[in-house]
Image (cartoon, rainbow, N blue to C red; front, top):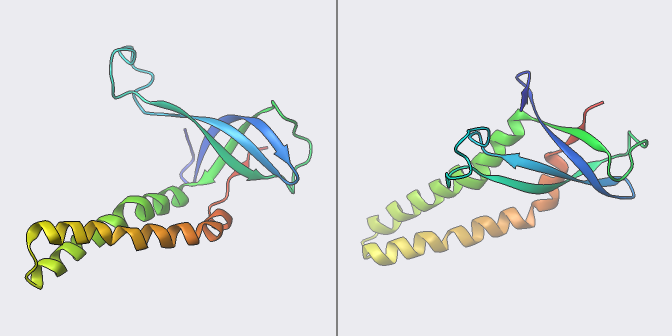
Length: 140
């Protein structure tokens, strides 16, 4: 669901509260879930995802409570860029560079794919930075 132009919201349920953090289960739905043919179509998708929310400002929630979680829409754009677009650029420019140096096409393709290992390793090492940067909030 999109609320306004700046935030994206999802309804969820608090599964676990530990300290100042809460684990919230949200149901991520594809856009065609509401279609009447979703039972026979393999495109429709519905998955439960667990996210962490900081509860420092809010202390009156308990496990099992239904909540609405929001995140800035620009964070979703950055997530798509980091997860899909930038790796594509690494693959593309790596392939062009290896082909420019005269490597065989198969070897150039394999080496381009191998370039993704340092990229995703860097994202993994920076996961705590991204966890602080990409924040979910509970709507009041």
